[in-house]
Length: 364
View (cartoon, rainbow, N blue to C red):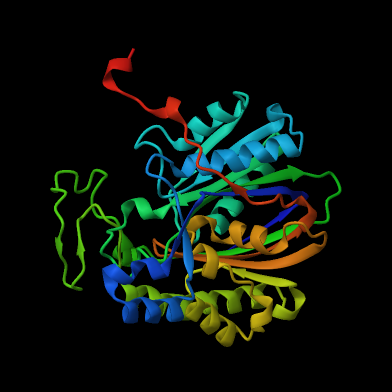
């Protein structure tokens, strides 16, 4: 386990944006049959998911959240020295989407822009990375933006995934403090030996010549190599074994117990996995908030969405144990503190960045 600790930096704001599209799992009855859909809904705990429109990207959702945060918190954008964007659905193969967001948000040129290609562990990995970059910089503030539009690479016939994943984006403001009391601690692990467990095989450069052909795979589901594929049993076993083991190791290493935390915010993989982690780590389930029923699995943005959904509009300082886990395989947990008064109301938006469209005729 890679352990890290960060002092004298605090979370000063959190904003979340979701698309207006809401799809009830009941609407999948004609595609998969009522029995299959109901069994899925009971096991996963999903009643509805958020769905972006075709033209809306992950960065559109992240931008709206970040822009709202900058305005509401009256941030001098020249004080922002780090911009990290976490997503597996970037705008382009090149450049990194963080540079697009720098431009759209009007940040100064004295800023580090960085993309992190991670999914369900992305918020925890992204927070650890952003804190590290800010701590070792001359600037005072940083923005961490996490967003995913997972549905854009799913086969509509993949009953294991199409009813599970929702779309959303968030922005977190981090700020240095001279005499800050906040302490962040993280424990992270990776297992690249299982990289095929969650994979989109084509669309980049390893398999760039594969035809975009839909055919039936060994699991009986029709998809193409350009669709995301998940080995369900591999991921399930990893989630209920490696993830709780990491949390237990982290608690031991930090000399803490679950009773020391007000909230345990877990990646919203599915309700059964949340209950298994609760049982294995001995976390009272009432400490584990749930949003998967109304938003689905929101990949890198599960934890920020969860916090906004449950704590926006309240005013209390919470000590929170967080854990994200998914593609890579990668998994992480951490201890954070935040004042919930800094959580903005969830934004509903279908805005898109039309200037981001690029055609060969526009090439200078």
